[in-house]
Image (cartoon, rainbow, N blue to C red; front, side):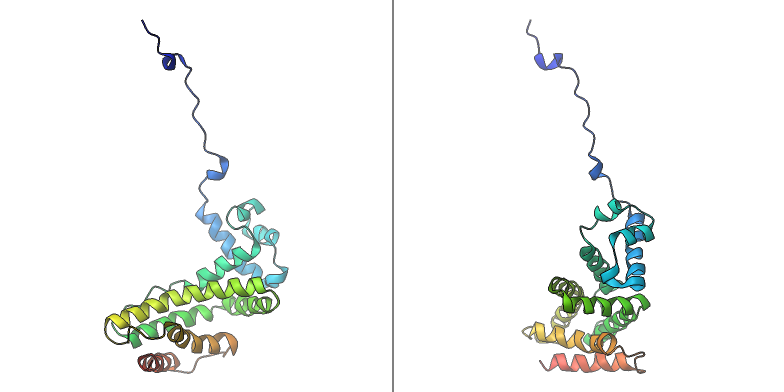
Amino acid sequence: MTTNAAADEPPRPRRRAPAGAAVLREDVTEAIRAAVFGELAAVGYARMSIEGIARRAGVGKTAVYRRWRSKLHLVLDVVSALAVQGLPAPDTGSLEGDLRLLYEVTSRALRHPVASQIIPDLQAEAARNPDIAEALQKTLREGQDGVASRILAAAAERGELDPALDTDLALDLISGPLYWRSVVIRSPKLPKGYLGSLARATAQGLKAL
């Protein structure tokens, strides 16, 4: 009678998942993101620390580092989320309507009390730190351009725009004016009807490209 060696082996203990494989709790992640806004508004980027963020969020530093590897990556993630928060590609059926909706949502995001403090502070840091400048530009640009690109593609499909238009120039034309007035000049209040007029003028400009 042949002996089955495998049958004689003692049962192997079940392998336990490593501690690092634990699911990251979403409520902790959101608490950390909220703490970043609070710290940026209170002390600014330069004086902000992972320790301060963790303390404000009521968590340990390890919880922060498990999600983001540095202060810069954490801030850029939060700013990127703010930049595209509530910013799905509009689908109103017309280029002007889509632009109007885009401007309304973007304007609200840029005028958020915390964003109005954070963005100028990060811009000041970017002027001194090329890494921050490059990362900030990439983060904000990609979020805004992703939505604007879909608006352009939909308008081209409807026959409102030439599919061969200069996309980079079109994206600058869409994003530039509102960003200039809200972030650079920091106009305290947009004139009545400004967003509608901007959407109309931008649509006409895009059709002329």
